[in-house]
View 1 (tube, rainbow over the protein chains, first blue to last red):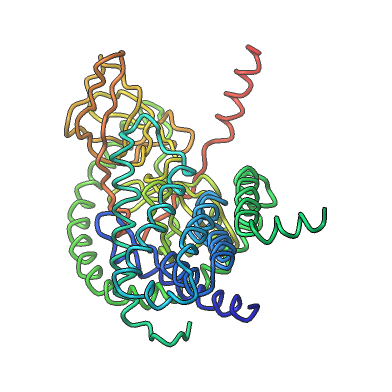
View 2 (cartoon, rainbow over the protein chains, first blue to last red):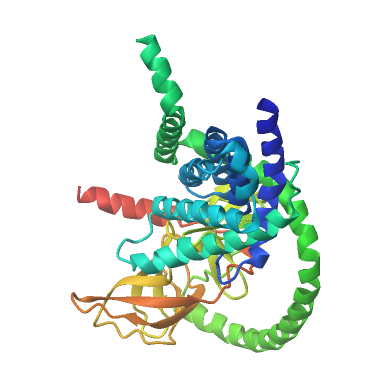
Length: 162
Length: 278
């Protein structure tokens, strides 16, 4: 278990570097996919709900620290996302949940929750159109993240190496 | 009792852990402005930026070639403009001398490159490869040739984080270049808007918006964007003016930091003035 945590943290470092350097180049009109969330969902499904919750907390903490966003906002968002994604961690259904379309749906759900909580704690103006903000800040990034998640999961071997 | 606690833990451990971590996150959110947290953050992003700057350099090599060509073209155009401006500057100096105006345009610039970006829709930040060792301080404006990018928010030895204009926590006083009317500009999560603009103000679509001299962050006019019409509020006496920024924050790679922070002299004067009436 401890080794698993170390491996997931070691993988997190290059993913965080890619998220902050390369991913902005593939943003579409300020809609940015979240690679960290894809990694978090993968681990939540394969390792369980508690693992996903704790890992979300650690990932969020590191992300907040190095990006200058409100410390704690990504932390709380990713903790809850890891928890929700952990509901799909049934031992005998892992392979089903890691299938192309299923994985995409789980990533979409987790990303939607992540973005809603993150936006809420970023305290934007409540006088703005709440549905438009929900669509732009949560739905679109979640959709893009889910699409990317589906592409990435194709290249992840069925026998777990992560 | 122990048996009950054991069974409670066994049945609800996922929820207990989630609740504990959420409470811990909320506690950390409340501690954001404490100096200890700021120090830890400066060390963390300083270390991380060392790595990302290497990756960023590699990634940017391709785009540098294209940018080089554009810069040469801009350079040539600027050279032509410069010769015109030199003429104007000579006349300007003479007139200023006559009016005994103090020249405030001689601010030094610190060149910097963006090593990483956080392009969140509400908390846009960029990490720059210059820090306190290059005399960068919190509060300095970050600009490009197009206009204002943001304000330095946190500084470590060799790196700094700037809040871009697309950050809900950054509010700047701006003015309409044509009408000279001032207003407070902020990012509302969707657009840059000048808020609480009286309906009597004559700001029109297409007007250039620049930073105001009234701003405590940016003490002289820097281009920000163009007014793109008002969000008419049916009731009340105020409008919201939407502003389209000159700078494309997603594509910005090389910036300058204006080596100035808000005048301490003005601050202390204003403080004394306030104290008088308290």
